[in-house]
Image: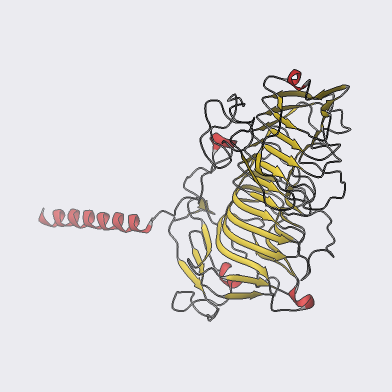
Length: 504
């Protein structure tokens, strides 16, 4: 009996120790950087479950590895014995692992050994590649290398805190470097790209074709020859469930192969320009300025642009193509970026829409144009396919001549509580055979008025201040029906809100 009791005690002790060891091995990885807001933009949030790779369950814990400029790829990748090149290091990672690239300057020139190309992580075991905190590394490309980071066909990966640019110490063709991030060919999903500074690249800052659940956060993408964010038409759904938050998408086309961009082969580089998809796409707290193309150009359905500034772009400010798209609390100004040459571009465009009765909402937006000689805003120009457009609490300021608003007669327009300022135009809005002037604008809808919005400092080709002066007719003249509760700067709106992007 005593022998049997000792055996039972030994078995119990073994089970307790085994359970403790198993629990210690399952340290959970942190959640993705930002949960996508389904309440705001119907954006998908990945569920957390127990993933498997092949027939093996993937533990959420992983190993932290290091890269340093004085490392060696024959090392084990520890802090004391780091690897030497980010490309090699990225290929050694497994689900749950983290790679820290220590501060310094890393030259990327060899295809494809120098390109960061990690494998996929797993749902509860993301792969993370990040720069050293407080000492962000710089990845410089040369020899016409295609990209610094290739995430084609990859899932559950985070990239954080890196600077990517061409090698400014090289000359001529040696300095050419095409793109910061590529997601081409095979579709990718569940990616976070945070705190990246990508600049002075010859083609796209990020060239993305098919992706589902992508977050681009707290980033600067500037001086890209072909555009900051863009890509070819999708073959597997295009861009879906994408959040772009607190990002600068600026100066596209102002650089190409060591020059000022005047020799670039692509004539209209956008800040943001993507092909058709189902979306949803959420762009918020973002600046798109001084691009040689459009500021924000989305062919995706379910596009939402919120609390953003689109300023001093050479071509269209905002262009929407897809159903169920909305712009709110956004400032758009400076078409032409200081060039007075008459052009076919406009502050806001809804055009080439291919879905009948597609819906578009423009709410609490401020538009200002100085150049004139083209429509301030137009909808379905020469396209009889009907769409539904709602304009509410919008300031339309068109200071140049011959620059009214155009709405195709086949479309359905709801317009209320808008402020129109067209000092050099008798006609404010035309829709088919109907024209509206300041004397008749009240017939367009409730609360529509004309008057000088009294901006603090309106501008053209430079930064302006589009807050309202205290005697502006836009103050307390808006509608709270379907209007945002905060303004562009996240200040609470009054019960009777102001017209435009800013609450006084």
